[in-house]
Image 1 (cartoon, rainbow, N blue to C red):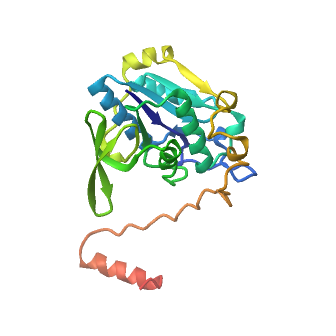
Image 2 (cartoon, one colour):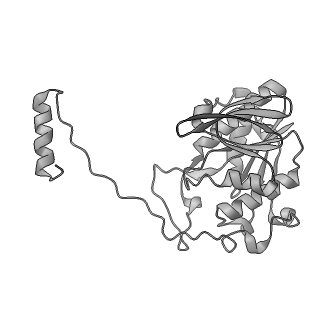
Length: 266
């Protein structure tokens, strides 16, 4: 059994957002972090590895520096990594990105017992589309918003979070699961993992390697092949500093009411 964990290197949104002239994010000039929800997907994979001894492969699409992110995840316990990186893939939206990642996983091999884990969504786009689209393009079942995962023989029992409760689903492998932060608490890198992470292989999949995959064609990938157009990306203006009122008695309530009246809120 092999578990693929799809991860993304995202801009650190606590800083300033840099935007290129074509409206896409200038990721090269911004500090980056591992997408938080993807860390929960990583921990879910490592827990199954602890139980079954399976292989865990981390997969990402991005520029060559994203390989360092894969090394961090290998230091946590992953066995190897796949970096999908090529100029032809640049500027892809969720539709094009899911085609490329699905093609890469198909190229790497997907057996009947394999599982794909993704985070719920990425903090830079918040679309939650890539994971489900990968499953659709690989024609495998999917379960989103997993809050609990239990492995049986060739099935997974998943507790799926809904707006007003939970739904338990049994899904057959191969399948794709998207994970929410309530699923687990990601582990830290180990000293042994840090020491040996550069000894583990990271394969680079470029366009030349993947061009024969049926999902990957020049006119359906990259900026040119992306049906989504970004009208504008920007850092929202900083909100004003709030005013704190001392105390928690009737006088404080009276002061609050007067201030809200002065500002015509009430």
